[in-house]
Length: 191
Image (cartoon, rainbow, N blue to C red; front, side):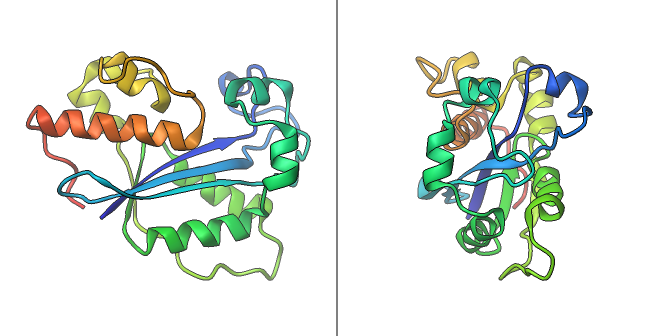
């Protein structure tokens, strides 16, 4: 089994270009999306999709809401504390390798500091992580500079972009790209 992970985290106009360097610009997780897939067949065996209530910036920027389609009302109503959502995600992973198209594991680490109350411990340890972005970019140069949600569309594997910057939809885009690599005869990273 493998787990494909994508995160959505707080952002403001220009924050990515600035490296979230302005005061108060923290990359707080707002959505955790993941797929569990059989590593041989690449068939989905489970989905994970949780909204998280950020604590440093509880009011989502208009930019973030427009980019992701995640509304303030949805986070207020359905968002969980980060530690609870992370515990549920770790249960979902069950120790299997986690693949992300980027350094999502770094963002999770930042949020352990930003959003987990002192004295609160996680139920499980973190699983092994692999950033597959460099692999994708080396084998499929057309992916360089693309967001995870654009991969399948730009490679001609999807007729349209399905909710780009929605963590779960972005996981499906990554999965389609993994399937495409397999069809081309490229091995997946040994997991």
